[in-house]
Image (cartoon, rainbow, N blue to C red; front, side):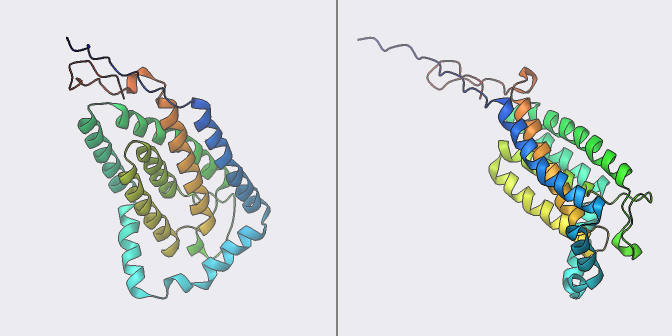
Length: 228
């Protein structure tokens, strides 16, 4: 009796794009609330001022030394090089342009959103000793936190283990910005939320673009495998 011919497995449908857009909208709600509180001088902004003025988080010299290491790691030139290198490695390993496309699109969108908020709000640094708005500052929200969590969220959909490690790294860099007196805690929280939602939304929408599909691989039984 002859063997039945191998049948190619049906390609898995990409999750609906609306799912990721909905996630981005959901994450935007706390961003709007915290931003409104900062602009109005509400309780969250007063909490920011209290935490920044206390200096309790800078009492341990060893922790401060480590914080400065992560702070330098989060500088644009260093962090950008790491992000591109990781994305390029994943693209090479998976034989797909998808990681590089997601990285470029996500960071581009992120720079527009975060940059516009920074220029509009103009919050001063905690180190200045005064929490002022509209003075030409660029602290709210944190671009370091936004970029780190955007990349971690997007890549985490492709490589969950790597996404988890990148989230820990992004959190360490974000905290270092507070520890060194460059950002208020609220700057970090809002930047992280914007980054995470942007990364998820961009990665989800990219699932529906043929440019980012993974190349097909031969099936062990002889059939041509569908795109993953």
